[in-house]
Image (tube, rainbow, N blue to C red; front, side, top):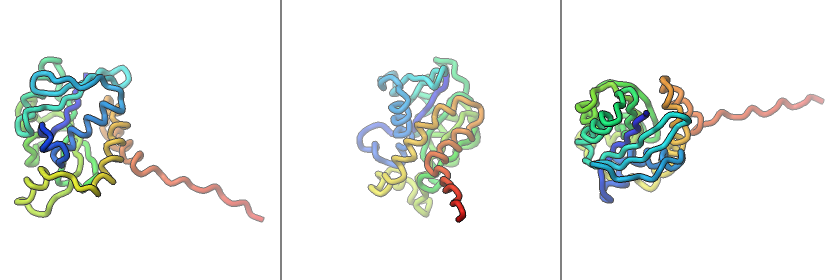
Length: 200
């Protein structure tokens, strides 16, 4: 089983904030891949689905960002899901808006949600880092991630989330670069070379 985790904060107040892009990603993945409806279980929202023959469980912890790992650890232990089968979608201020990177393991880089997950299942889970941009100074970071997206941000958020959802089944493989490359290809398909013109 694959456990897909979206990080965010519960409640309408936070629904449109940069910190909640992990929730948004999970919503679009579940919708476009035909998952069952979201259900409230314990301290989370869960949605079940499949990528091909691989069962998938979508999880949105409702314990607030800095306690996300509580729900992730509980569900991973319940279903005996190893860390390498846990994929966490989260906002990343060190990436430009609309950029995406995938990595396995590593530190939290100041992200409270990632730190919490690491505390409960160890650091060896996989991360889909979704760029939301840096406000410029360290003092501005808190307000930046907890502020709503600007209207203009829809120009990159919508196509990016659609691309993530369409490429998500590739996360069943061991090579996460296949997923990242598919997202990039959807967002910027190669130009079609026009046929050569006939002489004469």
